[in-house]
Length: 221
Image (cartoon, rainbow, N blue to C red; front, side, top):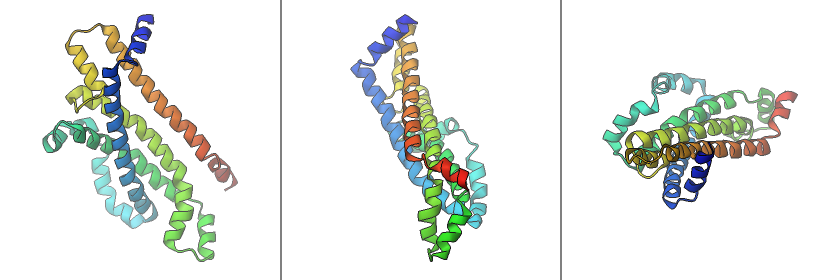
């Protein structure tokens, strides 16, 4: 264990590993931005309109169970093996938690608050923006936090399977083929786990600071 810890410390200052870690984080961030940009507006529409949700149900229920890893051959055929392929798979995997949390959050919005806003002359879009979206924002953030972990797992998994440009998985795959000491690979796994832990911890802290008011509102309702 001490050898792995020492090796982990060495990896953390290794320029080659840092560059690969940066590649993973870049793909992760791009995929998360794309997933959020698609899922939130779509979730607002589907959550506020039952007709729209019913119309989209068939497509959603068909696409949602498909594992992102199973789409790797199709993604390679259509996009290639580079960064674009990795980002597309990450965005696809990360989209679903954000989408469903947005839909749930919009539907969970306090009906009394919406009725009050309507009584004051607010239109449908104003109510959606100033009441429903504010109420749903903690749910959306939770979906983003869940998706962040999924996206990191998929990024490294894709790199391990097909490469997809610089990344932690690509680095580990290359090292395993050269017969390096196992401790070096164990250290890479530890660093990947620490990276996921750091991302989740940062987002949990952000959630507590941004949405401390939400539980009080739910209790009052």
